[in-house]
Image (tube, rainbow over all chains, first blue to last red; front, top):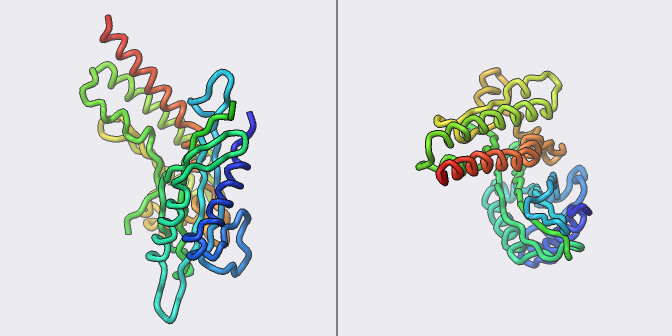
Length: 143
Length: 131
């Protein structure tokens, strides 16, 4: 059974990069790599993923239960005023809205992501907000 | 400040079976204890170790009825030792450091076994009702 993760990664990046509401907020910065030092914030970075065989699988079709975490980094001083959590919440809402419609995954057909938990964390520099946003998905191989 | 990072075994599903017969509860309690202890051991094994402090603070806590469990880290354990609650930086990563979310990874890889163990106990309970 082929892994689902490469097609999910491609579909997710494409969906978020092409979403106008999210692009307006993060400037199209959806990274599928480690951020460079001094990367312009806000940005999204695809992070940890897990993939385990799904209980949905059948005799002739394999399937996966997948989690994927997208890390949002934002915050900082703007005109001497601290901006952070409100901006993060707005971006997270836009991320969720952009994946309401199912994703088309090569070899697996359509499948929906559902939010599975979000944490709002302050980094130790006192100005960066880090928001890991976890999603969950189950998908069966295309017949 | 009180904070924690935790995963929960089976999301409390089993705890909702309030009318379940005593034998079934006993069986599920035993299954959850075994699964909780196995998941805790795997989490400790996967926890990155430099000093071993964080791994030693991996908590396993069962609900009062023993039908669910939480595994994770509490800020007070770190702050009580004069340390920042760095578990969040290890597990979630930072803008300068990749995440190592072993806590969730272990949970994902063991949750199906936990679900099956509960399912087996429930099936056994239903069989008892049928006879």
